[in-house]
Image (tube, rainbow, N blue to C red; front, side, top):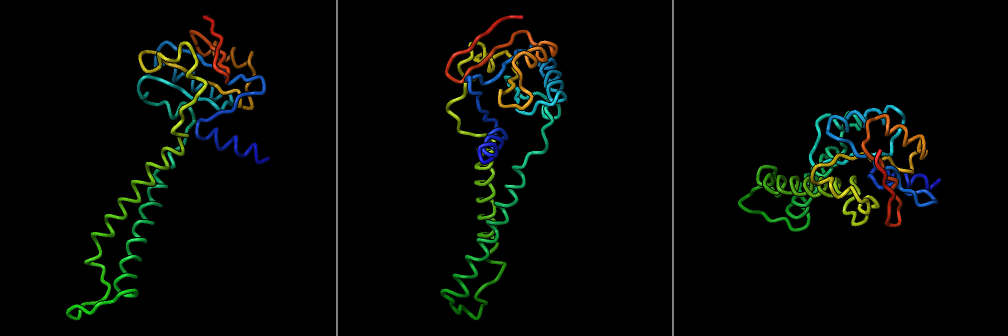
Length: 204
């Protein structure tokens, strides 16, 4: 049960587990961005959830095609900002009114007006730090190792190639059926990627 939970959490970050036979998944190449969006839509509608797309640049409409919801990073930013504001308010109240109160010209020990700069700074600081940390965590970064790096064709993804990867950890994954689906979606080549450093490629 715990292993399944861990696997699902990793999958939500794009980190997929290979099967016992070390098959990591199928990597399909598509000729253009439109074909990749269409393939992603078809794969999602077929019930696959452990898959990702890779391209040299962002593709408009890809999130919707993949069935991705709204990013949760914004909620983390809100939590970080509120935490920073609360920390700054408590810090100044504690130091000025509780721990070391000083009567200066009869002014109140703690007031909101002179505290605003520190409140603002800590709100922005914690919001920014939590945003960056949350983004990295939700994307499973840094990730120095990925079996896709050993694909012979995947190196072109930063140049002029468009790929869709379906992970073997998906409950619907079947080597033959998934391959057929990718062919029907217009793949120009399909690669069986293994998790121990080599892959098998053939052209359709």
